[in-house]
Image (cartoon, rainbow, N blue to C red; front, side):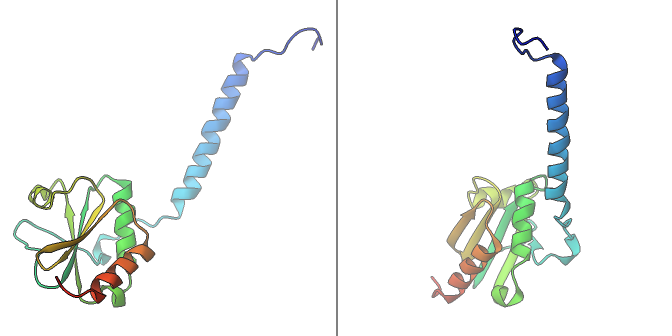
Length: 150
């Protein structure tokens, strides 16, 4: 290369950079999603809510609103299902898919998913929006169980 001639990018430089970017992105994405287990519908601690069910009863009820095609909802569902039995003792867990249960979506004024609605009897005690870690969910459940009923 002549020292007086300035460097200029050629089309093959851009093609190489794009190819490298796509390859590395694919490798990294595969590593990050490869260790997430697929959801096991049969082993769920969440009871699917249907139109004839009434989740609001005496005691504490956690009502999880989700969409089937949402990755954030799937991650939140896994976090809820990871809570241990001792933490969940005395708490009823329901899951409501917003497309199939629109009446609950409107009744409880759900503005987005994932959403975890915690009821103490017929009164809303707490609303948790977005993706929350299992540890924080345990703390919330413990706090709700130790709190006197409304």
